[in-house]
Length: 175
Image 1 (cartoon, rainbow, N blue to C red):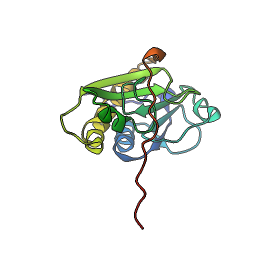
Image 2 (image 1 turned 180 degrees about the vertical axis):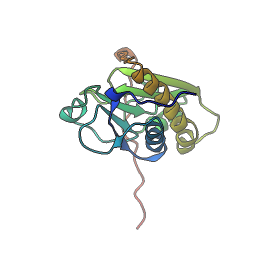
Image 3 (image 1 turned 45 degrees about the horizontal axis):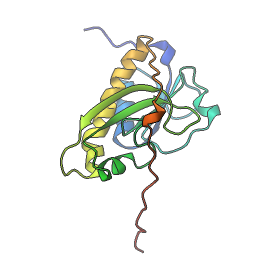
Image 4 (image 1 turned 120 degrees about the vertical axis):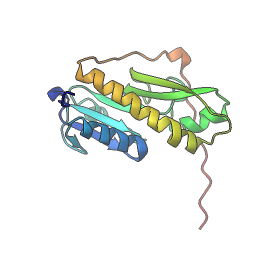
């Protein structure tokens, strides 16, 4: 077995996020020998499960660009509550998308997507944690292998298929 040798053109990788997608992406990058940073200059910026809107000066600074995870098959279900709306609207299939960040929210070119059938009767949180987060990490692993080989996929989203659902109303927390 050959030792893992990270691609110097990807060093370092800046990763921001929280939860299982973030943890999985960090572990994957570190396991492949990449220096992971939380701030500063980087060759690649990865938004692994964050809802923060990143300004152009920040997302365009890395030479390779900025990748963002989204828990839907973009361009369907743009917005912050994609998993909730996917189930609320009775969809039979969902998936994950890693896309390149642009000025338009959730509308950048697609780097990789993975689809899956939605299990019957599942709750949004369980769909995300048990299916979408692991699928997102697996898709990122494939994407990282492509980037290491110099393959940078950028497939434009079909705006005719785009949907955007608003954030769902949250119940106020009791005092």
